[in-house]
Image (cartoon, rainbow, N blue to C red; front, side, top):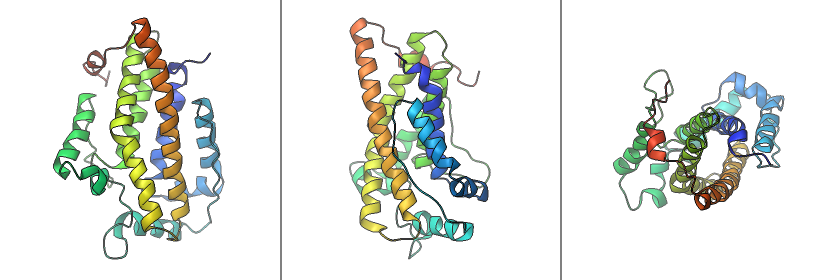
Length: 238
């Protein structure tokens, strides 16, 4: 039977592909949407990760329209505010009990704990609660899990970190994001693509959580649980 660690690199690729889908579009990404290779890559990575999906979308050839719809949905909206925010702290059901600064600090704490920091260069300078940052963080953890070699405790430590981040942060955010699409963005341009990607991300999150819970429960019963504190102390940059 294939273990979680054996499919970790495919899981990392899957998180990267989902992150790419919510990044400000460029023409190269639009081309792989139009020729269907992006969808095929998603389906393939999900299948290898033991989370088979049914995802279908074909994009039109008009990149300018595609980009303007992204800006309308996630940046400018109708009155200078996004119709749907890709930042977790903008969602009232997430930030209702804690202020925005506390939410951002919690995300930053996760990244810093694993030796990462927000990108401060170039045009992409997302806040730490941005969906793309969260997906890329999980891709990094899965990549580290894949590189842990024959060290079960290291592998399980990275698996626990992924499970805890999914449970504490990404799952709730995706649930709120899907609801926002349903309530605020119906019929807005290319919204069906992003609505589908958000729903797909939530579906995959649920599948991965079930995998992590099952595998780590078995590990706990056998007394071989990884030490996430020990994992976090490793110099992740090599």
